[in-house]
Image (cartoon, rainbow, N blue to C red):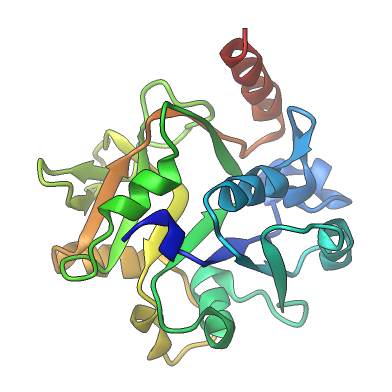
Length: 241
């Protein structure tokens, strides 16, 4: 697969942003600014740069603010998936949006993380690595050591051929999920529940040997708490000096 064939992305913007309080008491987390630009625009800019034509954005917490902010966005084209009535979690959010997503593999993008690019687009690298014959999911992962804002013991280990395995309980894993991935929609479509998490689908794919990772080239920035805003801005400033 190449980046040009990835036309659709699911952008997660519905969460409560509880760890970002008190900022998120009155402002949805995707509209928090880092380096003078909102988190959701950092995400959408990357998608637009890689030719993604349509971003399905789910909304719940302070949904009106997000819709107003995105109304003037030209690229990618924004499709709102309304979760005002009930927060569906990421898996449920995808299921709700499947009619708009279609049958082809699509991008996932969280809005609380972004990165400073290396010499080549990381989304393009992820797309080039995705092989539907052997993969159900491909995730962009970053080395936990050196990343900004990582305050947990990692998510995955990686084999030499790129397969990801979930971190064992009470262990530390060297790689963290960046919030960006490619997934086949058929993994979700037969789920009976309306509200469900996405991570178990990653772990099930790993158990089948069909979860792969691409290591991020550049610096990953996770903005999960108010104090990490300043850390991320310092990292951005250093990158352009």
